[in-house]
Image (cartoon, rainbow, N blue to C red; front, side, top):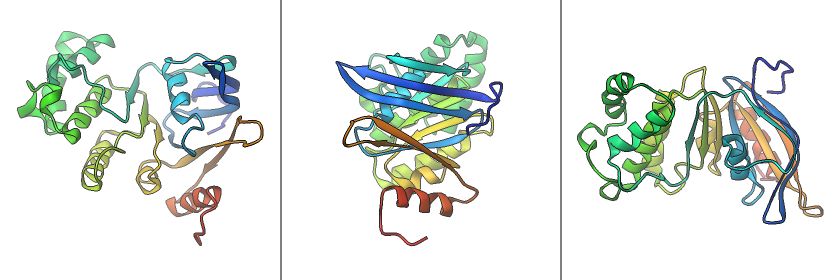
Length: 239
């Protein structure tokens, strides 16, 4: 992160401020993420982590400052699957591909393999209400990767699932991730996010000004990163 090479940067913020409903959510946000980075976005509840992802995805617009992205296709997986209830598993994935300009022939070739990878081939004609929570989130993952994203945003995608399902979906996620994909991952489960990332962006709310401060850390080992995160949260853990 923070390499001054615009060709290598996929996301950058400069003195950004976000105000929603007359409340300042983020202020003074300045950092950049390079192509291929796998980044954990961490911080207490309510500091603006999800809002930052929505800025990147274009759902929110900054009130002040600058935001730039060189991402061509953004995959977004939310805490809840957000599947269209009137479409089947296959149709939910297909519609995402169509919306991103993927040809009908490419969809026909890619879809069966994708359904097989997420172990949903036999459920391709099921509707969302017929799926378990884990199955629905697998559809959500498949939909995100179906568009061949260069930037993947994960907003606590497994927080509503039990540990067994979380571990299964984390392994599935690892299979899909390639060195070319940039990952920004929000999770309060530190062990989970460390398994998939190499660096941290930490957001902390200033209790006096109610604005956010940003700090970053890149490490060679997950142990060093875990120590940094635990130090940030002031947990009594010896590294």
